[in-house]
Amino acid sequence: MMVEAAVTELKLKLPVLPEIGVVLGSGLGSFADEVEDPTVIPYADIPHWPASTAVGHAGKLVVGRIAGRTVAVLAGRAHLYEGYTPAQSTFAMRVLGNLGTHSVILTNAAGGIKATYQPGDLVLITDHLNLQGVNPLSGPNNEAWGPRFPGMTFAYTPAYQALALQTAQQLGFNMPTGVYAGLLGPSYETPAEIRYLRAIGADLVGMSTVAEVIVAAHMRMKVLAFSCVTNMAAGMLNQELNHEEVLETGRQQADRFKSLLRAVIPQLHAQSQQ
Image (cartoon, rainbow, N blue to C red):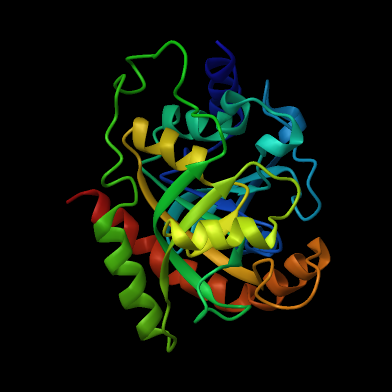
């Protein structure tokens, strides 16, 4: 009933319903300013919507138009490390799915494990490792939302991946790809944990996104996901990690990130119809 209450409230407040959702990670929140004819709703004004407490997450929903498409931009997300349950951390995905959103773009700040990455790289996520210790689909299943045992083979929509890579090339930069490992946090990983993650196939590490992708796939929404490599992971450089570095690197890459999203968003609509 909590999701339904939020959906009902938003349908009353929004002049248009979003086709595409965009979740902004740490340091990337300025993209919300790109929305045309915006309706801005603080999370606190949406029934049951969890507040964003992490630094760098504004905590507001911005609905309007980007490149002719109706979008819902989420400036801030709820993380498990903030003490939220899996259901709360994916509440936004449930609401978007019930509003009729057909596609979501998920972004995050991540530590780079792959040696060829550099801080500031935008990386296309092609798959993930769920190491957060929970799954947002555990418990009773709502068949109206999705099946009991959804497949995850194509959780990251292949056609969207090809589109993003082609668009990046047209914009003049090569975008690497990678597998994202989602950990619980909030502590950063130890050097030994990074060696373990590299051994099991992780290229990136962070504290979000995985549960959102699982729920989006459950609700049959198409997914495109990016990491901004804001720092090299623990042990790769002889220095301590800090959150201000994460935010600053995200801000430095915001213009390239925004250009990519502006170019990709109108094409997602066409892809979704195929």
